[in-house]
Length: 100
Image (tube, rainbow, N blue to C red; front, side, top):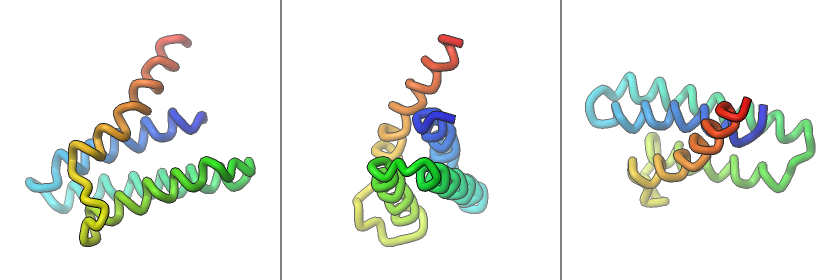
C-alpha cells in the first residue's frame, strides 16, 4: 500500500482519538494505540524498501502523537494541528480510490 494511503488510514484513527480525547479517554487511547500500531507497520515496510527519507517523517509523526496523548505535549499539538496534518493524506487517499 502506498505511504499516502497508509497515512490516510492512520489519520482515521487519529481523528477518532481526537474526537474522544476529552469525552472518553479509554476509547481515545485505543484509537491512539491503533494509530501507533499502523505507524510502526509503515516504518517496517519503509525499512524493508530502504525508503530512509520517509522514515524520518513517520518517526516524527509517531513522536508527536505520543507526546500529545501520553506525554507533556512539548510540540504544542492540538486536535486541529493533528487533524490538519492527516487530512492532506486522507484527501490523497480518497483521490486514489476514486481513480480506481
